[in-house]
Image (cartoon, rainbow, N blue to C red):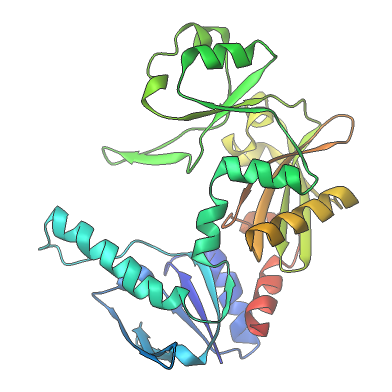
Length: 315
């Protein structure tokens, strides 16, 4: 039985798990979806209600019925012939996603995580409600595209704004990143442009430190993240060199809450972010179902890659 790893060819985090699978002599195939359809192929038939056939990639062939598990690490975008027009490329992308992706999604194997579960779990409003239902404390949050709503919300105390999705974009060949930011009086005085999209505003939570909790199956790894600058105090992603890490054990309520959260959304893996208040209370911020963990694994010497390999090997 084979493990399929959906990850880019250059992905140091995926390398860790693949190295562990190799050391255990667990059959595995790495599939960079950017190779499809130019360097990879799918040949699948529906027989007696189940997809059978083969996937060819990177010089290897894997039988679909021989897969035991799939790690949805961080699949790259499909790449098509340069001769396609923009319209043709869009069509081909949709057809490839629904065709190739649909066959894989229909296989009765262990997923970490199933792409449909990742998609559901990507909605921040869903995350917050789910966390609250699972007994986790959450911050008051506003979703709006109206300036007056922002000003009303800000009357209750300090407020931060943050993106719903990826904090980075590419524009004119340059990667631009937005971090969580405190909303200032000058921001409130000029909210032009807020009407063009939905925005997220959240009550600022006084913090002793931040925490990241990684859940893999029934295992849990937690790290306190201590900021050393004002910028990293607001958002620790501003400067990784200005951080200090400490392996910790979350309170029982938090442990039970994150396990319940993963069960509710069908997640095998989740990277949770919390604020730990000065009084010791943990406040849920978000959960990234495909969140990075490599640097945390190193900083707190936690066997996260081995835990992922355990789940994939068990199938």
